[in-house]
Length: 236
Length: 90
Image (cartoon, rainbow over all chains, first blue to last red; front, side, top):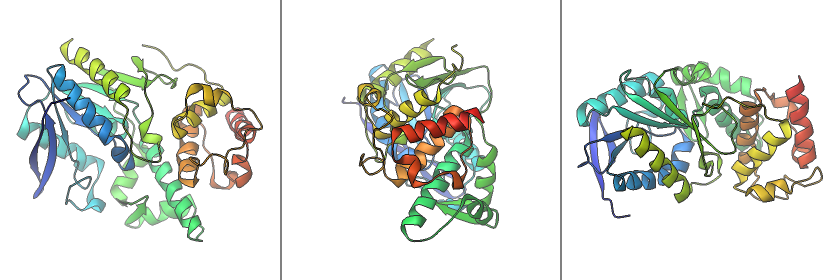
């Protein structure tokens, strides 16, 4: 894979937010919305491999940082789903006007900032699912430190301002949004699941659920299968 | 478009174990009720358990309370399946 990685940025509320871009010369560009929290780290390598493979299909892609994630200097505890949607709208205005949006896991909760775009989703996650995993991770690490924390305490802590969950400072706004957040219903969504998952899907592909693993990893078969499906979807 | 098909609790536990531990289908298919989990599988640490519980909630549409989770639950594959079956029947 020889496709070159380019770096660009978009301005959001006084911060410069990084974007990774591959194949900018191509006529079609897919905006990639990454998974949220830890899942983003575990899947980033797979996403970048997928972006390079998309370029081989003659399709460009852009992967922006969401404010408060990855390289962003935006205060993490001020991030919210609303702010992330605004940031994505800003990013798509300043850099290009992609009509195709591919989102992954928790990223599917914030792909509804542009009603005209076509949406593609891999294993869409509910906000509460992400929240409960992070609360359980915090409870497990507290337990190892000799502390006893339960979910009700963490919920109460979040309502008072912010709560630290699995290395993330979650502000009360984001916490409250995640408790109810579901991927937005839309007629123009293609939903993709892994083969061993029985949830509703337009297509199932082979690959590993990297977002559930303890460590970040790659999966070229998954990157390849996604790039092939995305290329066919964009060209349809 | 394929609809959400009925998933038995045992099949859900196997699928989640496969995803979380990065095992192949044959390895997970070889799990029996007596297969030891916590302590026997190095990948299954307390952090992995956090993801496992939430994934089971998601796939079986159940809610698992803090006080239902104890060490015994993860001793064997059989214990975990029995728990999932009990929760799914509630």
